Amino acid sequence: PDSTLGCAGLLNVYRSGNVSLCNAIGTGVADDKSIYPYVPKMIEFYLGEKPILKNVPTYLCRNKEDLQYTLA
Image (cartoon, rainbow, N blue to C red):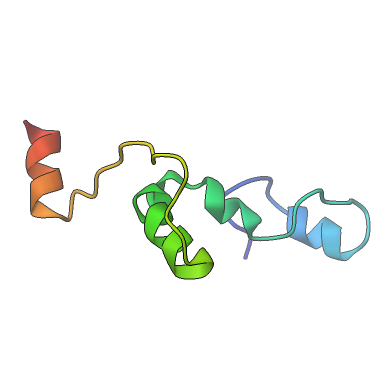
């Protein structure tokens, strides 16, 4: 089945050799805002260092404090 993201049928025409892609399949996950809260921890885990730049303020509403803040 086709993805609900992006251009419908793109993977099929890519596999048939009718188009070229600039980015590898699945690499767009880094652009998804749902992972923003996890980026600093990902940097520490994979690179073993603290992030150089501050993260965009992002809130996980499943965390009680974040939910209270967003509802205030």
